[in-house]
Image (tube, rainbow, N blue to C red; front, side, top):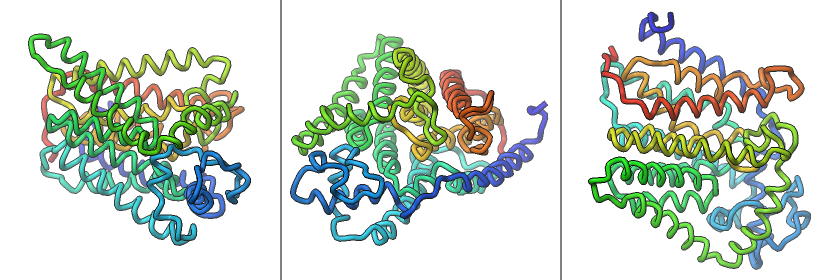
Length: 394
């Protein structure tokens, strides 16, 4: 039935849904001050100017929620420019940076990585990109003054070089993304696995791109952490285990999407087995995309599930799914298949209030995460399939 709908009508329905889904913005848990997460970095930049932030008690620096410094050393030291600024002044700089950076990221994916034909309706792409900037995850990211967009910048730059067959540089940039936010580690594993499987499938071709990519990522990650050796040692051996243990609740949080939250601490081995399976599935899909020379969608998909594997993730981290949704939109325009994009848009941008009650029988936060994981699973299978003949976009 949906297939019989006119293509223009499908796009109009998508636009209408994205406009309506902005109603979810009222469920953002607005807290004072504005930029609550950036405040944590601001106060520690001032408080730890002559010592390690990981040695300072959480109650000393003046964080309003009593938080310690939980961010990796590379991220923390990249914000030294904050030391002379108040939180208000910092947000005046950081907010427009997030907006401009996200616009630039979407532009690079469309024009420099995917490079789709313009077609007869080129205005559809900026409309879609503009609307997803007003959806819950990105607005939540801006409201908290979060930092995922920087990791997404490194990842996007790496993908730019990857599609140009420069695995060393691509790996190094993804290694920097991992040092910045840690969860791109899973994207690195997916891409390296995809390269290796593609080489094994096409064994006659002497290709060590998987090794070049992996060494580039490992080298950049190691180099940046060695540059902050003392802080890195404290962070990885003391702070990270403590924080991971603190953010593994038995019940699912309304504004969290960690898979460990879905299953609870009593079933951690199952959660890691599932995560390993999802990495393997996307690695296989990436290898198929490499062999069919359809890299961009697979690269975007490699990052999309990454934040679900961390012990503590929140809905603002879902900006990592934006490249995948954008590439699915470009795919839908090309082959006139909109079902997968519609499914992803509903579970990522849909009304949060529908899934806001942890005690609900069906539509609860656990179901929400399960649907998002189902979308990522189906997306991997779709990426692995040969592309369909192009259709007119008129």
